[in-house]
Image (tube, rainbow, N blue to C red):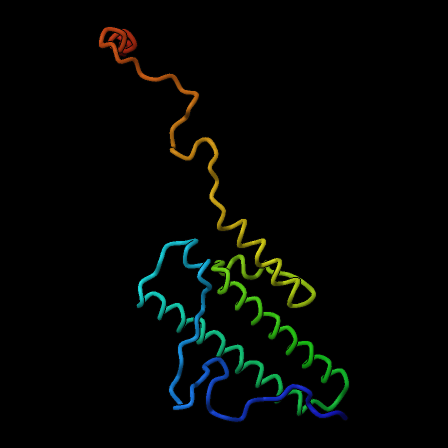
Length: 168
């Protein structure tokens, strides 16, 4: 039987945090400059919280991928091997969807709707969803008033005449 084609990291350092020559962690930008200009700007604490949440989620996916890889090593039949390989591919696709959703500032509900056969197709689908989600409609009715309604009369006599006199 063939060896596991996907390498598993054995060192204790997370994959998503690059280091410089001193061994210090360097910050990883999570949003593009275009994404900062589209929505409201977050303060430093908000960005830290969002980055921490994204890193935690990526860590959960890596743990699941490692567990799946370990189960793949223990697979004895071709059916088990295929089931584990399919699960690993599904987890990798979910992780890619989550990363695209964070990159284009999409909510979690839209992250599940990102589809495509390969990474490039999912990237273009995420861009299209982001354009639709972040577009601002400048149509009639944004102000909350009905433009076809008659304006209230400004003459006090006309205003008094419009009030019904008989009440039950």
